[in-house]
Length: 256
Image 1 (cartoon, rainbow, N blue to C red):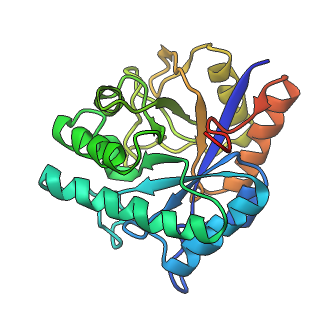
Image 2: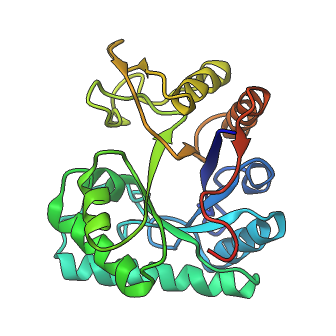
């Protein structure tokens, strides 16, 4: 049977500011990329999100990013690699405490936003993030874009790498994400997104932003929790995959 993980970015509310419907998404997804307080999230939000994930058997992942609350972690920061390593270590440790309080632990790491996109090509920053994960716990898998410098550096550091595709984002012909500022970068038709996801899971090509067929290899599919209609998109994707005989399962299981 074909299996795929379905993940979403959660825990991104802050104080009185609410973003996304974490409770609804936790009833659908199999892995939760939980913010760690640098790009989004506060201690109460993070603890509540980890508790909800633990209650539903959803794997908890640390979504690490630049220290950029005002920009939601979507602005590149040209920082010394050693400082980036320390920032990532700090974030994983903070979320680990919240997961531990819920009777769980951090089971993987996924970079967020501008950091995710930067380390597709940025050698020094990719190596810095890989070093942080390897120093913290070399058994932790990491999520990333297929073919990225990040996954190569992570493999060199001895980490298990997991290829990720995005359900609600458009791709370039090269297989990278279309920048959010460009028209058509974020997809919102739930049925079309679900069809594309099934094609990706089956290893079939999908249309890039210019119509070029591009094949995206993935072991995990991401639905952004802050996208308009995120819950409907996640539910439609999960339903379409299940109907096609695809099993939704986290790529990291309890005890691993």
